[in-house]
Length: 344
Image 1: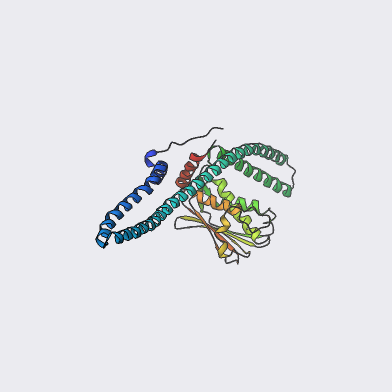
Image 2: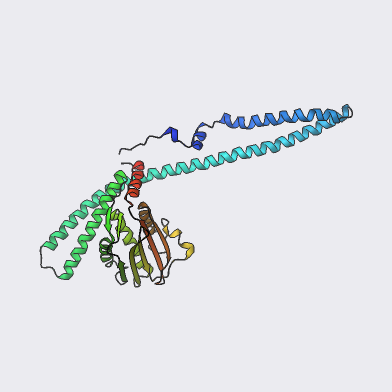
């Protein structure tokens, strides 16, 4: 496995990082000693003439010096406490930053290792699915199939092609951080295929699905990721209705954005949970992985868009995806960022 390293521009390093690198134990010691010396010197310089002026005799001067020394010790203790508290607070903050950096490095290494294994598995999966796809196509070309058998063969070939596409993109992502090439996607066609495929899922099979898609609706994006966004939202809506509700899917343009809405007639999502549902491993389902909506959010943000959840006129949840038009440049920029951190 080879690793790509990115040169660091020393001239653009943040000032805080530079200070963190140059701070030494001597600097902390000086920060304590120098202020203490200055305060002590000023204290003696000011209070000694005052004590001599106030003393009536030698015994009275000794008493004043004792009180002055006691006051000096007390004030020194207060001063040192404040200075030490400030310095140790800074050290504690730096330690937290260091811990976060170490955690991020460990997570990055784990992701790199996972990417290598994912790429290897995706390669093998692609070979298996290619064999399955070829077998299905051979089976379909023999003829003599009933309409029902032909429909099943078409679904199998579609599923196999989708799996091969996902495997190729996963393999490519594991090598270079790039999940695909952005292109113009006609929503009515892509979404129509996904809806037809999703209708045979056990959670969707008995749902009523209404599609209101503008024929001209199109999105600049990565096809395989957009299809996964569509599929995850449809499956989420179906599961929310327990597989027997109503789902409405609309897509139109609004102020330069492509707006996709997925309504369902389920119980809806409480306001206090609407932000956390997009977090990884957060799920309200007994057998849910908590990754579906997290994947949706990640895919939408890769396209420079946003996904929100609200209330649907159907009585359940409304998921709204907004993707800006002409988002190819943004996607390309994001993919370049991914490339800089990828290991191959």
